[in-house]
Length: 305
Image (cartoon, rainbow, N blue to C red; front, top):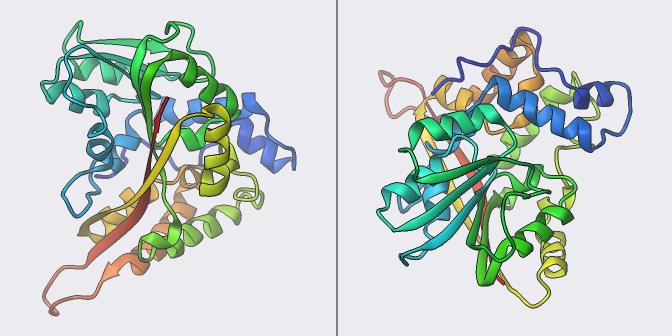
């Protein structure tokens, strides 16, 4: 459950963090450099976190998103920002006769996706979401995007590309952050992590990764209605939870937040100690081991073209 492959001795630095340190507005290239730096050194970290948390029905967020795909032979599916391929693997294992495609900008993530799937069951492309040059017009029935839409900026070209590749009647479904107060204690966890990060980078949070309009339901709906003016937009909220030894839960919960990657090892240790105290479940008896609980809100948006 721990992110052993992350080196926190000095904390992660990138063009994006340098821009914040210099009180400059990071541009698109700086954002791209930052995301690539995180994923190059920590390929697969999103899966490590997201696969553990489950909703009341026992589903993780990948499984909840995968439910959008119907059991129709030959359905053409694109996993946008597919990462290490957990969603593609779920779709392949479902035994549905699907034509699978995956796109990601990080070759290290694509290597993990390729390694976990049999040869010739998925077409993988190293592309940015703003330029899906390998995907033809009207060639995809369903576009899925798991927890990456909030990191993309500019977002309008991404939505335009999704509309372009979708066939008539096609669907776009994405997993994004849910409203903070839908999950008990999540706002406190968010604030704690950001307070510790802002001690190093005061601008972090004031300027965050991706297009800020994605983080508000109202502004998100406005963006989607502009890109898909005649489409039906549906947004559902769910809550996922993980429990376990408190130190492991704290480490994994911190991995949901890109902000935590910039902390030095010492600053991270202090933050994790505070986080462990925050998420500790009261002991049932004095002999029981210290346990922790992390609860997170998620939204699933679905658009039919």
